[in-house]
Length: 458
RNA sequence: GUGACUGUAGCUCAACCGGUUAGAGCACCGGACUGUGGCUCCGGGGGUUGGGGGUUCAAGUCCCCUCAGUCACCCCA
Image (cartoon, rainbow, N blue to C red):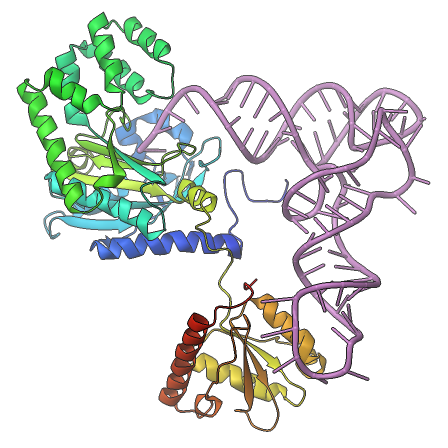
């Protein structure tokens, strides 16, 4: 359609913004619980921040241009380089380990598909300065905690984990020729998505001996860890790596999330960058792209920012997560509605309606009324109440005659009427007014609990 | 970047073999129901049929191009 947002970009209408806010709230809430603190950086960065490490070929996937000062710049496609720069600049002064998170909007110039747009929001959470696998476990607990916070369980989402160091030692043990290692990883990454025969053929082409091909195919199987334990567990380096993975799994158990986790040695997560335990979160049905991916990158800060600190981190985008929540009916159905909708009764004046709104708002309530002189003075109470219903408000307030405090409360879900001390609310005394509102809400909650509404709210 | 499929109102969909002024439901706005409720009834705004070109007496319908979307590949920080 012409005139809409650019391809791969989104307009957030209020209902959709509510979805986004729902996800952001869960991200921030869980990060707070894990004592991560929020940071941010510029959405626009020098182009070479991204080309320096990855080379010029990634420019094709960047939103980049020359600014009016002749600088080559790019919209940030990822947060890690910015994060690395910020940590490096104050590395000596920061209390370690650093536990930071951010919710940047990221951009990539690529063809859009389901779950993959040109713009998205991505939670980035990182721990810097701690090499222990306890930190790896802590980080995965954040990602899983977010799933729980959003109402998802281990039947909805699976965490798959692997370890780059274990894989490296296994490839040596399997006797994969060094030149064929990239191919081996690429094939491993495709386990489950590509027929076994095709994968075998690719490995043979790369020059792997028959036994190595068999062993590598075995790595993609669900019970690969036990398989490798019995085949290569006697080799020192392998034993050490498996021991580390076992310790990690133990920590995950202590953190209460072991049931979410499957060991899956086919998780590769790119060919460079990661140096230790890696993980991905997927929907259990396998219908969507990865929800989240991360792992240990102990040498990246040295390469990028010049400080030698171990680090673990993950990224979790809002797009795939949002798809999953919608599929499971776990998204809020609509934008937030007001708590009160004020209606003018027959004898009410516009002044009184406004005064009641002001009093309720001063006490902290969200209040709507038709801001129309015409409607407040001539439209029937009946029609105004229809509008109140459509607003989604919890309560209708009918302002009546003589006194500003002469109001009648209506529960829009018909759970039963609740009295509001309107005199106190309109007394002008903030403490009395807030107490009146608190008492009202408490009564309303009780009423709703003991008399469930007969009909659902719209 | 490559390939396949799909584009009609905000949404879900109609419209015979190419044939009058492209319709309906939902949603939205207004009104009636003689001033306290989601019902019902009446009315209204909304479309260059994604865009452009072609064939034809006549195109939403057939052909070409283009744009957009969906899916797969590639890639995945």
